Image 1 (cartoon, rainbow, N blue to C red):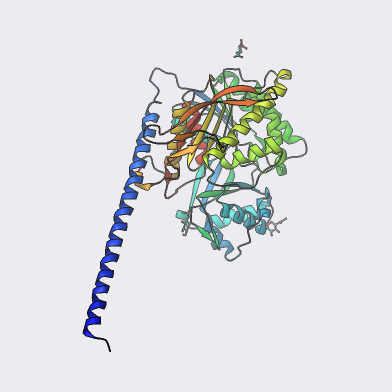
Image 2: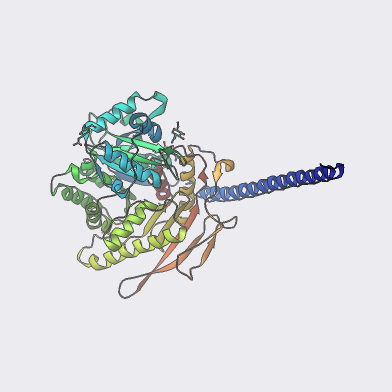
Length: 507
Ligand SMILES: *[C@@H]1O[C@H](CO)[C@@H](O)[C@H](O)[C@H]1NC(C)=O
Ligand SMILES: *[C@@H]1O[C@H](CO)[C@@H](O)[C@H](O)[C@H]1NC(C)=O
Ligand SMILES: *[C@@H]1O[C@H](CO)[C@@H](O)[C@H](O)[C@H]1NC(C)=O
Ligand SMILES: CC(=O)N[C@H]1CO[C@H](CO)[C@@H](O)[C@@H]1O
């Protein structure tokens, strides 16, 4: 039997417990609020820092617009929600993601689903050839029966997207591309076009997903896209010759080469691809030495094509732009003659910087070995790597590239504006991915840099050693934090906007 007294004790004890948990909850709410306020405060500080650096880039009315030329190709992008599309048309057919999914060329539905699973679970961007024209048409047909609000058509292709971004940054732009009468009006009329009118543009199917989207048991770790194409025009770089001709008159400060990832071997007879790449090389080498040449990397899967880039393109450019996947891949090709599979989607800054140094050194060494016999070769002087969380730009000290810090800030802001689809940056919609400081290399004694109110975009100088004689070259490196959007709206084409805005700031 329970006595009155023990009842009282129990009640008192419970009251005390309740009091305790109320207090705990209260403290934890305050603590959460404090933490989120702190992070909001930090975001606001970084944002105003980035905006202040960006505002220093305004050109005066007297300064002539920089002239930029860009090749090659254009297409129409058909953007769809990846998981909705696959669930609707392929239902329960969810394969096991294995490295077999990394194949470059797809021939049937099984290969498509395997390949998508592989990249989706890694959150890695991918661009693949659907060699089966029947299946590609079928997929387009499927997309078209989806609700009108569910699919979106855009102008696509690296070259036109970069061209528009350069134009928006105030440049005078020449674009080398063939386009249909339907596509041309989507390009600002001020952009000059070197290329023919064609009846139909190539179409790219862009399967987009957000961080946390699920497909079967797979969960995407970050927002990204998976691109499928079956191009007839783009692989052949049909506008190269017309652009070369137009360049003679145009004399740009910057020539950008992009879109070469479309040159899949399945589109060519033996020897034909080398012929086309040789045309690109001729275009690059026919530029006067006051035109800077830039090559925009992309997702390359075929080792042979990467080796051909090393032979025909890389020796003739001053600058390279790429994302973290493309950097890892290029580093593997240059150092070990291999390609990599999908890598970490959010690599540490130290790791990315080390890969950038390795790529830079490989290219300097290639240059040193071969430039004596070929005066047209250029020595690399700029590498821009964009990742979800930061922008890193390396430039040779004393080179023609101006404003490296502002270029990194600009690229970081463009990344945010693009992915959030908003010109206005709302600190509450932003997620911090970076810590307050980072190591500049994975080596044990590497200095650390702080990212904060005093330096939202840390920059520093260092010496890069290369060659057997340990030659030294001074470089400047800047790293800008990206204010990552909590809810990604659009990722396809982000790289084009980001790279172009960084380049425009450096002319
Ligand atoms: C191409 O795709 C169609 C439609 O899915 C399929 O029936 C056909 O077998 C595929 N062809 C090859 C060579 O795989
Ligand atoms: C796709 O649709 C699903 C379900 O309708 C949704 O949860 C997901 O966030 C969407 N993804 C994108 C990229 O819009
Ligand atoms: C650039 O080319 C001009 C004319 O061909 C030449 O006189 C000049 O020395 C070159 N400049 C450099 C930096 O190579
Ligand atoms: C935010 C941002 O820069 N978005 C632009 C990216 O480029 C396209 C054109 O290629 C513009 O329409 C976007 O406004």
